[in-house]
Figure: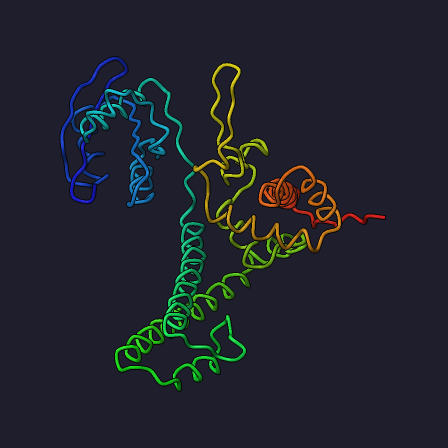
Length: 333
């Protein structure tokens, strides 16, 4: 937590001590060396708001550390019913000593910071859409119709909207919504400039050029996949990459019965969202995907068919990133 840590120290066969301390990797490292001088240390903590800073501090101190996805920590129903920080830290310590914990991928500082720029850009795009929807909601509520309704909220559209006669309260509400939209629009433009600057850096130019050879993949989408995935070799198989992105079914089976409840809730939602968006563009640009999509649509609805196309798109992205070669579009005769 932000103000304190609950720490459980174990040897190979027993619990030694459980205590609270200040949230400091340096303090914990010093405590271990002062009290357990000849030991080999291994530390685990759950991924959370603090990110990977503590992980890097432990590594600098020469202590082996892993960051664990909270949902991957083995637990019992009793532990779920009586959950507390003490229970959680003891559970982490026990499973770590047994060797049953698997750490998540920890990006480098440069990759993490570049991720932050792309994620901020994506968030500003969503905020801009929300602002537009609020303005349109007020327009419909007031019964306002403007010829050539502009879905992009252009300057001409906003000027015409301001000229419409409204009650003082409605006018004030509209002014507030327009001010909010102007602010978020400025943030989007600023974030876009930062993304463009980052995309022109030497370490990304080749990767983005290769990614853009795939039909449906633009510069922003290629940059998102590059910064989020990093080294594609860390995924041993295509199925592991699909699990990470979240284009696998949520399956529940028992005995002879098996039911599928859409896509799994666990996955990288930004990558999955962009991948599906790119797939809709690709079925209009790539003849091979157009043909495959039409075949799928004969036995399933379009929303399910596009998921299968998304897996094909992800396989293309993996091929290009792994082999560092451009994608060549197949010619259908």
